[in-house]
Each structure stands twice: as C-alpha cells, then as structure tokens.
Amino acid sequence: MQDWFDHSEKKIISCLESLKPNSIRYSQIREIFDEYRTAWNIPAKIRIREFIDTLLQKAILKENTFSFPGRVEKLFTWANIPLFEIVSSIKKEGYFSHLTAMYLHELTDQVPSTIYINVEQSMKSRESESGLSQDSIDRAFRNPVRVSKNFAVYQDKKIVILNGQYTNRLGVIENDTHAGKGLYFTNIERTLIDISVRPVYAGGVFEVLRAYERAKDRVSVNKLVATLEKMKFIYPYHQVVGFYLERGGYQSSQIDLLQRFDTQFNFYLAHNMTQRDYSPRWRLFFPKGL
Image (cartoon, rainbow, N blue to C red; front, side, top):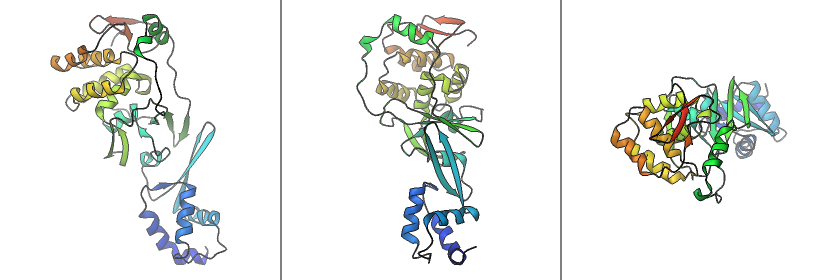
C-alpha cells in the first residue's frame, strides 16, 4: 500500500465519518480530495481515480451502482450504512412513499422487496374537474394501471422512481426510523392518500385496507381531509378514502368528513377489476371479497 495512504489513513477516515449524508457522488469525493489533499500529505502525482481505487481496495469506501434505464447512478459509502440511507441519496429531491412509507410507519407486516422514491414533477397547469365525465372515468379505469418502468435492482431490492404530481412536498417529514436515520418520507395522512390513489404501489387494495386499520389510532382524519383538499385531484378520490375509513372501522364523525365533498360520479377502487361489488354510499366499485 502506498506510503501516502499509510500516513493519512486515520485523517481520511475521520473526515469521511464526519460527513453528512454518508452517501456521496464522485464529484463530491473529488471536491473533498481537492480540499484536503495538502492536509493529508497526498503527493501531487496521485490523481482522484487512484485515490478512490485505494480506498476501495482498503474497503474504506464502497461503490454502489444503480442501473436505471438510460442512466447509471453511482454512490460511494463508508462504514456500515443502512440500505435506506444509501437509497435516499439517489435523488436528493426525492422522498419515500407508498408501500415504502407504509413500512417506515409500520403500517404493514411486509418487508418490501420494492422501494419507492417519489420525485415530484414541476408545477404545471392541469385539466379542470369540469372536463370529467362518467364515460371518461369508466374508460380510464377499465384498463390496467400504468406503472413506472424507471427502476434499478440493487441488493435483491427493486428501486423504483415515481414521477408524482407536484405538491411542494406536502406532508413530507424527516425522521429517524427502524430502517435508517434522517429519512424523508410521507407522513401517515399523506401516505394513506397516496396508497388509496395508487394501490398498485402499496401491495394492492387489501394491503391498503390493512394500513387504514393499523393507522386508526395514529392518524388525524381532519389532517387527512385537509391534505386531500390541498392535493386537488381531478378524480374523486375522496370517495375512495371515505370507503377505506368506513371499511377500516373509523368513527362515524370521522367518516362524515369525507361526505362533505361532492359525489357526482361512480368511481373505482382500482383499475381493471373483473369481479366487483358496489357501495351506494360512496358510489364506488370495489373488488369482491374486500
């Protein structure tokens, strides 16, 4: 091993361990290298690639590669970093959502094999509710739901990037969890809304219902309704949320908060249902057996 490394190993490790977050990109390592190389007594002939290769060989650094369609993301980590902390650095503007947020809130018994990171789209004008019709709703929900193909496989996990609607990170919190520290993910209220809208990213409608049941003593329905109003969906997802609250055994006073919304159309709990029942109260089709 090079003399320069033997003399500077402790200083390099101490510097890396002091950094937050503890997953960084090649460009960030280059900046650190340029800033500290004199203090670390690294000879001028040593270039950044040799520096990184040395740390990799010494197992001080680990290179993590995420091969998304059309783009490869590489992150360098040190020490024993939990998976979720590594993944959270893939998209600095992203946050965990759907089934992943359910897991972080302990609203599911599943240990998910898929991790969802939501990256919001930019703000843009949207179609108004006046453009809705029963025929357009029926057509949209008759077909299978489209799912994101922007994913990478890493350590037997599927890492999926979702391009969610712009909400200005409504209901996103930062917290330490059983899966890692300093993670950004949706709060319980926003999580329940998201999984109601896209049950395909939550393990399906039965898993969504179980999440509502487990959240019963922890969720603020007033806050949930306020969040739902701020998200301004075109489709009447309040009918879906009200249905889950009813099936989840919530109090009548809480369920009634969802009935203050207009209910003009028949709606659907999920896409492409073959066998279904109907709730007159919520004007909602749902899978048989739910």
